[in-house]
Image 1 (cartoon, rainbow, N blue to C red):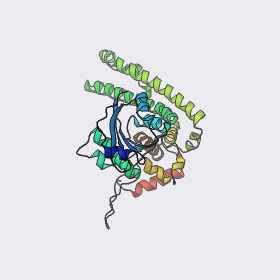
Image 2: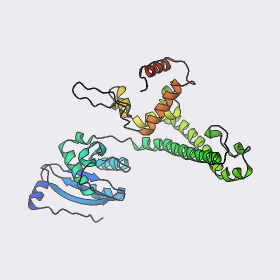
Image 3: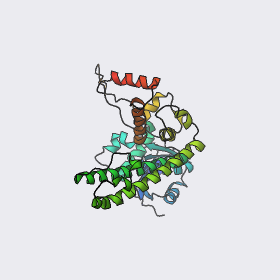
Length: 327
């Protein structure tokens, strides 16, 4: 593949490129990606583009000596990081939203982002707030949960639309869970309205069947691949969905020194803005995986709600909630 090189190396740059390791900044795009090579002395050795495909990246980086490559987190970063690691490179996945030099730059473009990634990775990788992607197997298993979540979201939208349309004509669909909503529930509605809403409720019924099929698949995955979910399900309010989502999102629990660190990982840590004697109470950061945090909150609502059984965990949670006031 022909590479679009934009930097002509001067004699000084050629000499610099032969000394010491090379650091590469790779700005991932949907179709093509821009990369920049910086040597140990900070000279830009080369700038070029490569197709954002497995073949394109293998052509660009497969024959290169082992080096450090910094990429931004995004839709392509999981498979790209695994591919480049397999080629023998040290890969740093940067949380660029935490780096103002990248996210808030007044000269932001693919070329400048690639160079900035390379320079920050050359100086100190910790400046990029690096993250670690989960394995391909965990990502594929987690995708089953994401598919179920998408089906539930689509069903919720259709149910809300059907109820809103009926309400606009002075009618109401019966109060029931979305699992039980189907065309048979419209017997008390006018015939013409039934005919109008039937396509929506037929689709809702079909989505419900698909969601139940995904539930069966998740039960099988948890039982055969992740038996540790049975331990988590001993907590009232934690089912297969919450337990499996937690295990697949965290994946390697050994990377956390303390269990409380997992709370920080999913954004349950309060923000801090301390200055001198000022230590204001702030809200949680809400960083990390949104879906996992949503599942954990739903589990907590069940434990603290009227359906939750009387347990030590429930009593502790109610006492904690009372001490917080409106917060």
